[in-house]
Image (tube, rainbow, N blue to C red):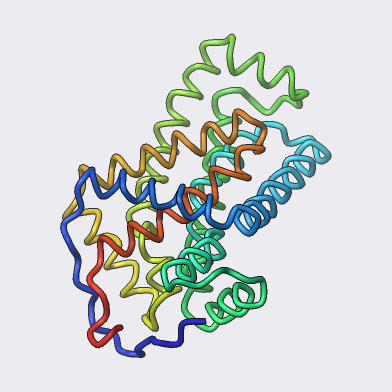
Amino acid sequence: MNDNKNTGTTMPEIRAVTTDDILESLAGGLRDFRSAPLFSIVFGGIYAVAGWLLLLLLFKFDLPFLVYPLTAGFALIAPFIATGFYAISRQLEDGGRPSWTALIDDVLGSSRSDLGWMAIVTGFSLFIWMDIAALMFFGFLGLNSLSASETVSMILTTPAGWLFLLIGNAAGAVIAMFVFSFSVVSFPLLFDRRIDFVTAMITSVRLVRDNFTPMAIWCVIIAALIGLSLLSGLVGLFVILPVLGHATWHLYRRSLSPEPGAA
């Protein structure tokens, strides 16, 4: 576990980020996945299984209209659940070989930081998104109790359903971009350094503001890859989520200057 952390609240220094940095971060994420595939797949599998259980609960309680917004909501909480991948990447970066003991120590150690507060913020964002999605569904498609197949048919074959998809996806994109802006590097920053979550969020927003085009590209890449995972029935999360998690670590390293005095 890396104990080389400060307790100060100095605002981290932001670097310029280019599209090449985004692509090289993705390459680094894929490289880390290939270097420690078992650990990465296990962490990715935890979240895939959790997603399946949530979907089963929605169908059990006859809430099929929440399936799509919930699965899309993975993009909102993905940075938080990537903590295990940050630990793997940091250990590889330090020249070591990941072990379960070291990874668990790293992940549990991060719980003493402000990561918990960031989890509350992103979790609250997910709940807001789910509430908005439910209200929009009832507003456009009514309060009738429909089966999953009837719900899909109404959404895909009726003007009200098309309008729901159009406006719903637009609203989801706005919320996702908002969450992305304050979380894109705040989670790895909180995992790696002793810093408060408000400073981490401000740093993340400043990074997106100062490097809007490449960071917007990164947001689109995340959305596209998460979309592929959804189309695969969440099976793709076994690979896609680890690669994105590792890539986020590399992007964090590229986008922020090291702490003063860090080795």
